[in-house]
Length: 332
Ligand code: ZN
Image (cartoon, rainbow, N blue to C red):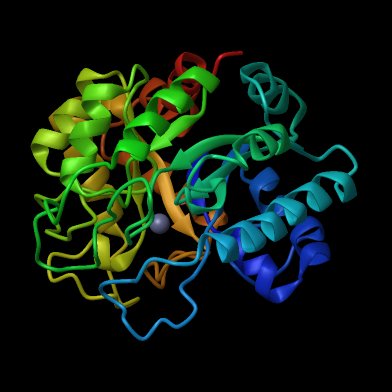
């Protein structure tokens, strides 16, 4: 399983649905390559870009109506993929869907929103999106909204960049717990992280974040945050994004992919193998140039094996930890 990719964002702008289903050279993720490489599930993020991206470090809040429209388009694309896949891709709505997909070599698509703007400030769109399959939610992307404050793209920087969740955000944590929607802490600032840690009854999850000790980006998690994730029974999905891997924070594809393994092993050593997984941020970030896409995952697993990881540990990394967390988080 991989914890975060932006294939829907890519498809919204490229309209390469057929290529996604039949396999293509473009992008990091498609159905054929995930199946060929035994990746039976992934989180499909709906991310809405800022209308102008001139301000790269501190994205401004966006108009919630724009978020509803763009997110609706991406959810529509995922439904189209499901329909056109003839049973090869399924929008996962309950835990058993994941097990069935693993068994049948079907790809389980977990619908994720990267920022809660599209739900509406009064959550007026939540029920409809839940019906469409929404099962994972980041309260914020790296900007403020009605629910909280995202971390800006600062380096070097502590993730402690602003206030915690708003009253609406605190309520939304409880609502998500009640519906069994997983909450994603990647992109949330530190005060918001601790608010969720205090309020949520579910394991804490960061779908695509790395170790702040190795790369002091505001997007990464401090040792104290990592320990809190483990204490809750949660996990961290390691991010392949160069600027969140490197100790100089450069967003440069000329980056040694071994850094991915180093973050992975750092987190595993600090908080245990049960709390680390693959995040990737495929199709959403600059990754080391030697990483082609999902087809590069088996190579990483071989390298980990050479570094002493057992088969059992690799299964936890690839799927066991995600399955444990989702079983505990989703209601059915
Ligand atoms: Zn992200």
